[in-house]
Image 1 (spheres, rainbow, N blue to C red):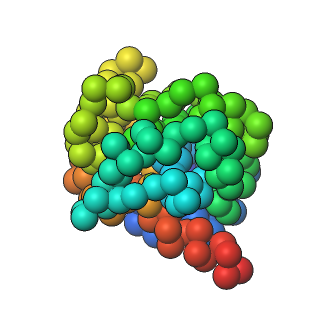
Image 2 (spheres, helix red, strand yellow):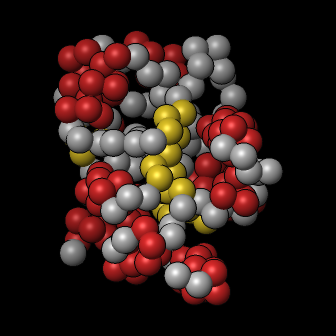
Length: 191
Ligand SMILES: [Mg+2]
């Protein structure tokens, strides 16, 4: 595939967005060359509302979250419609990065495994990291970009799905195209 066509596809994602169009183009890695696709977990591919409390501004209340991270409660989480998109994008051979604000333990990873949510790179919060979600995600994705040999995350041509408007604003400000997961899930439920 010509580099001109690849960049045309990327421009199309960036300018016209929309998961519907993205899904039409998922096809094969060769045809779309989507590169890296970043997924948040809570509110994006997993519904964990029953154990979640948000602070004003949208960031997770981490103390409340920690208290509710029991094996039983995590097992009661369910999948949102975008989980199917994540699976389809993985199966089509694109590179999936999970970027979650969760502090993960074995129960979290077991849930992903049990529900067939596969990924190539996994970013979760360190126990002592209390940064706001947007700041934390930018910093950790910039670290990953450098590990993968890119000068910065914007140059990865990544697209991202997240339900936190603070995160979306932060990622857009550094040049990453973001889909609003709340809107995309609602659209898929209505379809
Ligand atoms: Mg979220």
